[in-house]
Length: 128
Image 1 (cartoon, rainbow, N blue to C red):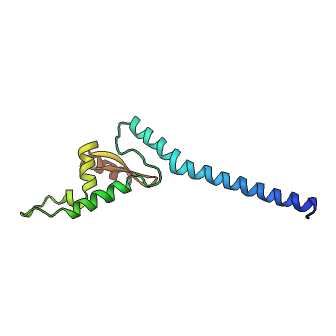
Image 2 (tube, rainbow, N blue to C red):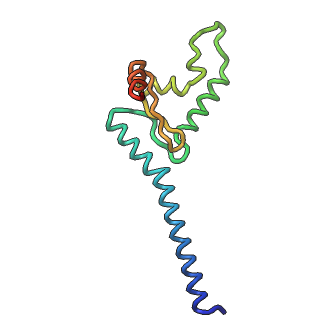
């Protein structure tokens, strides 16, 4: 049986490890859940609609599903220059649903999709 000093040492080490584990868990919950939800609320308050945040994967599952579905459908018999719905079906669908500027998620990372040419010019001018 160990001495009181050894027991105190092990309980101190386990206490510190438990504290570090709790802090890591709080940070993960903050980064993967709380922060994206707050960003989504802020964007909605500014009038920017978009897909709701989904924990951990964001919009990735929807994007992959739409791309897979678009690639499985055969192209029309006549050739067309309108290939955008086939190349990026998610952007095409969401622009029609949410408007020309919308919020999308890649995991917990937000993506503001801007498709209005004038707004794109304004954004690029301001970055200089």
